[in-house]
Length: 382
Image (cartoon, rainbow, N blue to C red; front, side, top):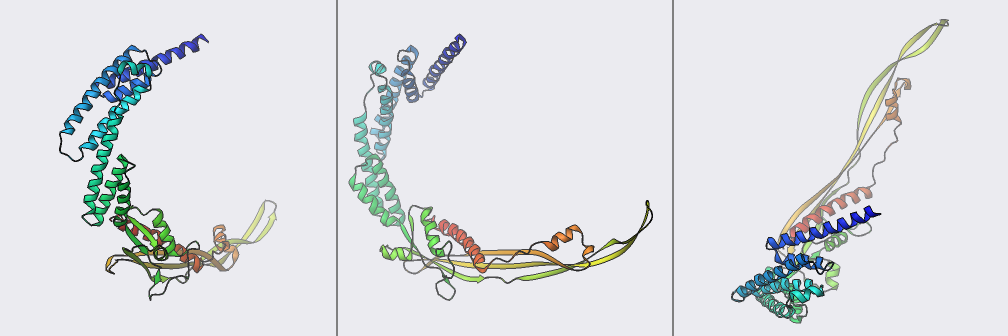
């Protein structure tokens, strides 16, 4: 029992000594903010530790001097982002105040200053700067400038969440910044809608739209089906035309090879004595006919993108193949000529070729995945 108590006390003392040493090292390295926060945390357990009290007092004093010096320099700057930098300095000062405030006994000794009013003031100033920058970007009237404006309004709201004007402009900027892309129903060469097969019970293009909507890869690109675009009265910026150029469901082709096998087998045994048996052998022959049945199918999907003016801006071809094969064997002649391995081949169960529907499913899923990657990669540049 005494041993356990001794170990517990020793562990607590070691941990405490480590805490002092760590805070002291931070102080010695000039990391005053971190030293204050760590010392305050440790003083919650022992508010009267003289070493930690000395560290937090000195660290806070030096930290305040550093931050206020930088704030003064920033206030003299003409850089439009100075208010944002000043806000960050005040935020660091307030973080130290909050850490010390949690230890009432230390609060009376260090007497930190509450910078919350400065945070409010400079958060609004920083928000106003970001808002003005956003307005300036919007007046350039390009997709890129609207995207930049959107990001500026986001930052304006981060500094002042209640900025109603920034919220309105954020939504307005996004409407102009976004590229609305319509995925048209997939067609076969010749112009008619391809609908004889659907992936998972849904049309190919519908599945593609869902996949792109789930992860477009670009916050400024939104994908719609043609029906959704019409029903929601969406402004169309670009259209993706999907067209199956070729769909070849292959036929079965057989390639046969014949292999002759033979074996010497016992056809007669004559016993002259119990320990004297004479065997007569004869050669038996058989032909093993091995058939390799193959079926090769392919599809080519053409992806064309045009803008609202009808001008083609990008195209690509997506190819997929489906190769199936099976081997089976028959024989003629004397079965006794077959080895065990030959019998296994001959007796192997025949594998049936996949159905046309199964082949089309695999092909279309393959081009869907490839087209998804290529379309997403293309629109990531917007």
